[in-house]
Length: 152
Image (cartoon, rainbow, N blue to C red; front, side, top):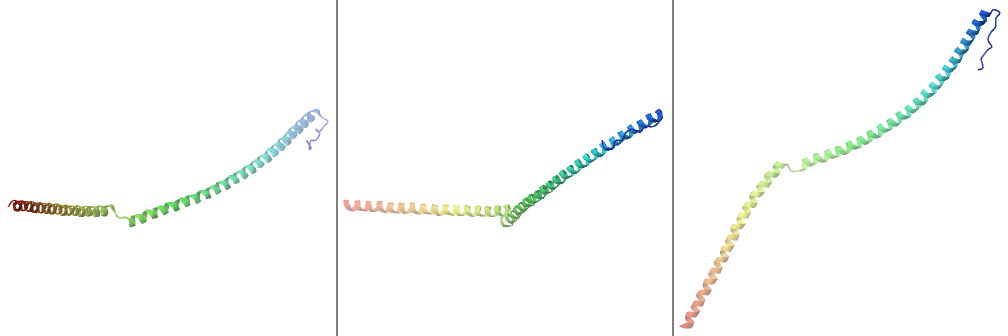
């Protein structure tokens, strides 16, 4: 890579081996540091991308919550209207007990009127029958009178 330096050389072979080993370790440490820096940069990029996605998700969730709150508010308005309608009905409708009292009273009045009509019809039939008997009797008397006078 760009910062690689040639291995240092000294006059003693043992020092040479030790320096070569140190140089290799240093080169590998540098390579590992560059790899770690690259991985950290990549990880930071991924974290930023995830943060952006989470931000978009939170914005969408916030929008959805707002819509849900508006829809819930509309439902509550219609429920409140329904409750108001029921309240108005309970104020204006007759109670069942009151209705039953009025119904029973009217039933008694209708029964009384029915019995009166039966009596009136009975009288009418009786009078009609009486008139029929009277007219029939007069007719029989007149016929008999006419026959007696005719034979006499």
